[in-house]
Image 1 (cartoon, rainbow, N blue to C red):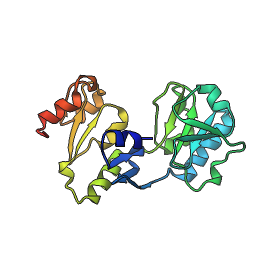
Image 2 (cartoon, one colour):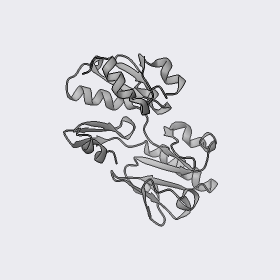
Image 3 (spheres, one colour):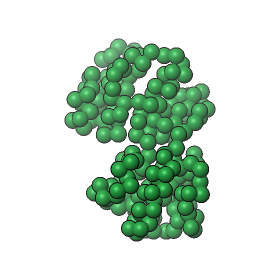
Amino acid sequence: MAVDYMHELGFHNMVSDGGYGVTIQDELLGIEPLPKEDIVALIDECKEKGIPWGISFENTPIRYVPDNSFMEATSDDYMETTVIPGLDPRNYPEIYKAFIAGEYPLEEELTALKKLPYVRWHKEYFFVEPSDKAYGIKKIMDHFHADYKDAVVFGDAMNDISMFQDPWTKVAMGNAIPELKELADYVTTDVADDGIYNACEHLGLF
């Protein structure tokens, strides 16, 4: 889903999918899936507890669900949703994301989720997806034989903490969470107040 934005901005390389997808010169080098055994255990727990769920098992903006219960619980249109009756994650070699319907604190009540990374972007459901952005950054820097010290990362939310590490420069947006600002080398203005531009100017990038 990030490809269109990459092209719109005139870029040809990007890190996506929570750090587990790397694109170089418009070619996806690969996306690493979630641990299959752990995802199966999570879906089984959701089935037992009557919690609506969905999965993505291919590199498309499509969410697959076993019935209409996920859509009835969320009315979500963020992704295209396709019903596959009898859907079972065991039947697919790789699972890239899972979607679990329910409001907070549902994620704290699922035992199988303790072994998996997740993030909540919507009130009605949360994503189970990779969350190690530093992993992808290092892969793309290694591809170009670039020094990690030359990288600059920007973040504002909890899912950015994984990339706020040495040896590169860490910039927190003015609207960032306190935990991120504490790890930052520089705190810029809010994202809506030219935060990225101001940070680039401060760092002498142009």
